[in-house]
Image 1 (cartoon, rainbow, N blue to C red):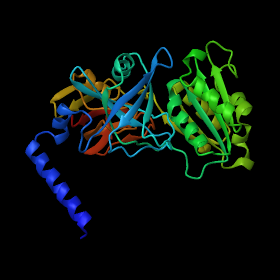
Image 2: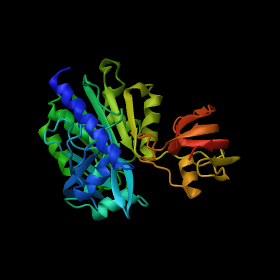
Image 3: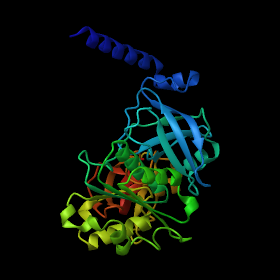
Image 4: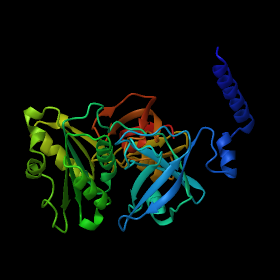
Length: 369
């Protein structure tokens, strides 16, 4: 064993001893009382700048602690803030270039009605605020070998992961054709309007297409359809450009419309997607009873997701994104059948971990909450 490995082993043993003495809390719970940015295991980040690009959104620049390992363009992070003494966590996608060397993380958060964390950050975030941060996660990323033709499609606040992809590509001096197609209600709702125009002006291989679905006056009219696709990226269905790929993030309506067009053209294999809005349970699955065994609570099955039904029953299970991507709300299903509302697949296996936010009970179900 080398001297370096011996030192690391001693350090780990020393830390384990200190944490055992600090039980029942981790040592970071005590360190944050002295300095919120002084952590041993947890990742924290301090807000270093705040901007409001639109009336209902805020852009935060964060400086993470040393544990941060960076991210790939398109991934998401979990951000935690303490509101009225309770830490709440939500998922957001970094919008900056993944190849930036300044170590900072840029997030743009739209204030959603009823969104506790998004409303809080829009109203109260200021330089110096310390938040908790997870390592980046998610598979909505660009391939290592970049395609010769790339179509980036976004709507509303779904712009952030594809904005990161665009910035990462131009930072790496990607020479292939890039089309950035963005849908919003009006021009004033574009979060990165000036940055997008600057990139398009400075890089001849980047084509910016903005669509204003309510006010009109954009580069195209109406909502996404085959004519939009043909106008901006006719090569996406061309067998001669077999490596062309599309990346999509936006509200449910846009996601559905794009998927339908790609399915009709039989090019769905070229489309990569990331959800940012919770899926909804279809009606007709109600019936039976949902039992939350750990809490001793039971309720009539309403057909909604197990997360929603648990909250309606007065319980507070942990959750993050509510979209089935962060796995924060995983619990054990003791018995019964559940349906994944994103895929439609059903599962009857007992004693199995499931995600509460995308699992709806079908008949009687017992969950260890």
